[in-house]
Image (cartoon, rainbow, N blue to C red; front, side, top):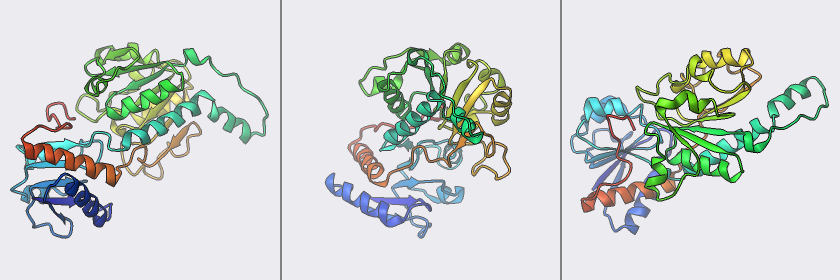
Length: 320
């Protein structure tokens, strides 16, 4: 079978070698080629990161497309337009869960230990120990509880913070699918405002869909307790940046750590860059790791070859 890799950001040889290794372990005969260099070559399976529409439209023999990232919001419209009958399959963790857990845990501790306040004191040469909130009342809420959200929530629970979640269905589906329990209250999206009122820290790990676009606007963010902290490592367009800035300037919100933005890269003149209560990272909270991703993709291809349905098939109606 032929595997096409379209990933301009990663050296092709890394994908080729990792895929060949795991194909050999599964006794699958594969030919891996660089679709960026050989765009006219036809493939049985495509592994892609932001492919052009014309390339996808020219692939007539695809049996499945694998997205080389956590979110499929950029790829799904192309699939609907040019390959509507071809299954789109997303990565399920593949080494990204641990990275996300690290990122979120650091940001939660940053908020809890009032590091922004200490930075402000340092700027004025002020020596002033600050009082910490009681940990048991410092609720950390996860808006979105997929594979990466679940990994991060477990890490925060291990740090002995109370954890709650809000999902579309009102159930911890990722935990159920993994055969584990999520130890915390789970709200449905219809109870979003009630959920937000209990979050001293809000961790946003939503996919971008028609329902989540702009979900966290002024009205929603103002439901957070005064002084609450926002962490967004899901999709930038789920959060209205100007509304966040307004609530920060009104001192209703205490600060934010942002990894994703409405426009990426974040424009150099954007006010988020210079805001003293905002920390910015360039969409690096959970990056695709070639080795684990290649292993997972080959296992999914092996399942397809057996006639089984692998995990991670995107429901186009839901958008994830």
